[in-house]
Image (tube, rainbow, N blue to C red; front, side, top):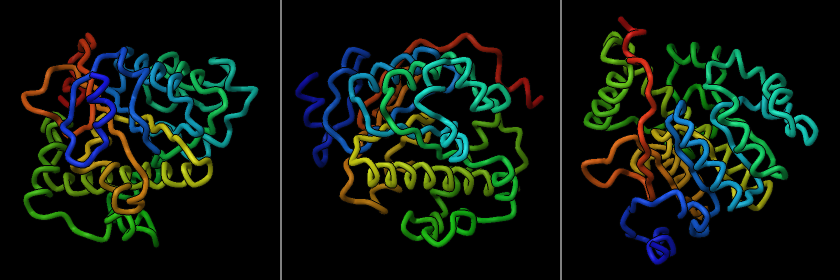
Length: 264
């Protein structure tokens, strides 16, 4: 496995499944995208383990807006209850902060950056394209380019499945645009954090955002081709074929209620 880890960033390297122990010897990269299924505690344990080994200069969280990230200080990040209150985590809709705090704690010197799309902006996106919402730099991240018909259909199908096939068809294009916008925001925040600190930068985000075929890696490759990226996906079932990550880990699934009940 060590040999695989050392060559995984080379051009054409094959994606590989790894074990949690391998998280302590990930190959060099400028930006590490550590995916998660948000409510799986094991995934956050793995992220914290990788962060401790990598000692990143910056941590980018999908869960935080830029304003929230600016509230994190050397003093309040030492206490999980205080930090959760400062971040207004309980009202955020994300899973229990107890799962996320060890990631902060694993890199006490890292700068904290947020890449979340505020809720009011997400609502406004229903009447905008990702290009319009992102602003002047949209072309740098490929947001000025429409998806092909096949790609649009594929992404709409993913969004439909993620929402238990309960969304009206007319909402699916907007959901795809929001996903594209979030990918670009994560990529831009990681790129800026790398420019500010020299890296390495770790991005904490959902596994869907770290897909090399359509997520943050694709946006970074376009906007900052000189930045090396390692994308780690975390799954709850063994894939039928190699998934679109550099590395992946398969964990036991969480015992959770049927998520589709909320849509019925």
